[in-house]
Amino acid sequence: MKKSNEQREADVLREKANHYLICFLDRCPLRDRCLRYLVGQHASSEPWAHTSINPLHASVQTAECAMFRPNVRVVKKKGMMHFYHDMPGYMENNIRQALIRLFKRTYYFEMRRGDRLITPEQQQQIEQVCRRHGWQGELNYDGEEEDWAW
Image 1 (cartoon, rainbow, N blue to C red):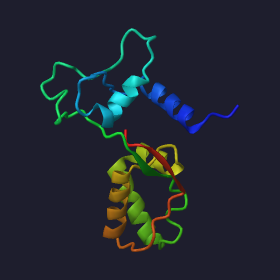
Image 2 (cartoon, one colour):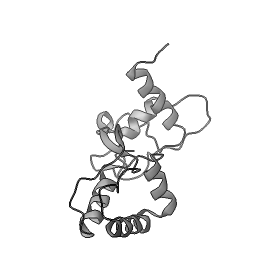
Image 3 (cartoon, rainbow, N blue to C red):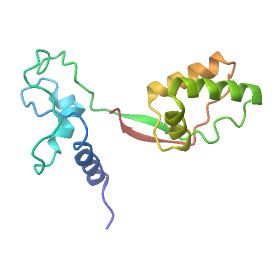
Image 4 (cartoon, rainbow, N blue to C red):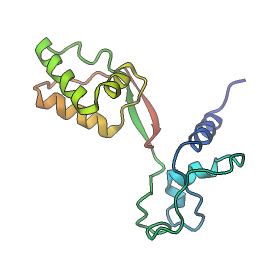
């Protein structure tokens, strides 16, 4: 039996509740737009404890909550296996080395293989590196997925 998008989304949120900083504060003015609160609503009652926001902190439950994460989905790029195909060799090497320095080797190769999605902020950083090294062409990622900005 195939799951609906809503069921898959609920599964992701339940799984995320096991290792994401979540919020249970019902009186927070930002709760309807907060990803941490949304994840908290999908937390299981089974574990004795969850990692959650401290309700006693001064900024919590205010419109300026420092822990607020918008409940929006963004387009993340996936994979960079064909990223360099149109680039001249010298430019490819310089850009690759700069990206490895920026993201560190393990993180870079996880992004390149598609094991780690590339956030919009990281996409901007990658574009800046490419432009700084002279590449003016299109940036060819292997694909894209919509996901929350965890």
